[in-house]
Image 1 (tube, helix red, strand yellow):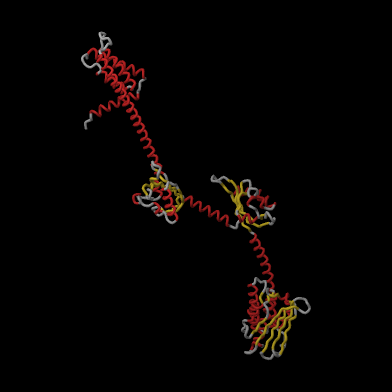
Image 2 (image 1 turned 180 degrees about the horizontal axis):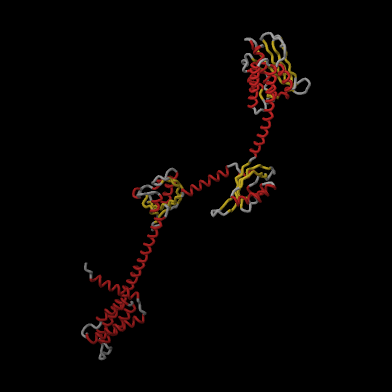
Length: 594
């Protein structure tokens, strides 16, 4: 395509103007150039062109001077051209060098070309200003391009989800980095969707409120959960602000969402750890390297009777009695610094009462992020209950050993007397087994009460229930007593022997006989404290005759109960039925149930 000649000439003129503006001469040099140009034109005109209007050839010089040099140079050229033109057309024959019409033409020429020079100078100024604006615009465009590229790079690399919404809260833009963190594969699929709809529950309410606030020109923020397009639920810290137009009114809405899932998880872990520390019953504390204690949980403060106001003024060794404090300072803390751990049994000192508290002292180092030791921590457990339990266990073991020896002694005595008084091995075996069963039943009742006592009602029902129906053939009546262990064992054997004898020969050997077992506890006439009176009485059975010889049962009943109950125990073989009676101090046998 051929180039337009006008555009070509215009480009040449632009280059000339640009050169003259970039290489501006001083005013004196401008006047010198103008003077030479005007004199040359005047000389050419005077020598070669004498018939034409004398001012015509100076006009291009004037225009060029104003356009290429300056407005002042153009005005100077106009004045100088008028003088030179007047000189070339004037004559000494005229009184005023030129005729009247010549003077009028010269003055008119001067006025016209001065105005033309001023106009052309303004054109030159306008060109210079436009050129400056063009260069400024070019530089601005470059800066804007660089800034746009920078912002695009920032948006692309930012892990924040940056979105632009319209005033109705619909998505119009999402940064590239935002699309990655939100797992958006195609933004066009969600463009125009209402942004608050991406939030559920309380988050949706907060998003709606943020959009409304932005429409009013207000910024806001909130923290809520929302799922990515891939279905991954995350926590977001959201800032919403209006994008203002030139009139200062909101035109769009900017939303910046930051993924805080990891920090939220860490915060939750820290909160849970804090709750564990504050709710645990263990002593949790921390101290500086110099041993100054700066943190104790509530359980620790309560354990040692220390107020929170004293934290920072107590030393690790203040928690221990002198001997153990020296051990902690010289052995425990150095071991922690060297080996990273120490655990052992020590005693804390209660700050108010001075009482020693047995503890399992567990100490570990506290380090900074660089692994440098900055202090000590402890999770210490109160061993008071454990120590008490161990003492109770030792006492129980000793008591059990003592009782076991007593039981074995009773068994040995029963076995010995049973074998001695039995006529044959079979009867001895039967008698011994039944007596051991009675002892076992008594032991069961005692075991249920940790061998501290046995309720008389339970013991009677347990032993006699095998022989007849309680309440029908065997009638019992009396207050609830608790018998001592040895008394309970002896009483159980006595009941067994009485019931066995009644089943073989007495009231329980037929269909009509009955046994009444009654007891009472009341004050004695002598004023020596309450006494226990117990009566076994058989009625309705076959006539009773005294035995020809005393067997194990009668011997054990009278002698053993008399020994254990520390009172009178006697058997009477009445014709109407066997009668057995005990009269002893109540405290020897047991006590009334409280």
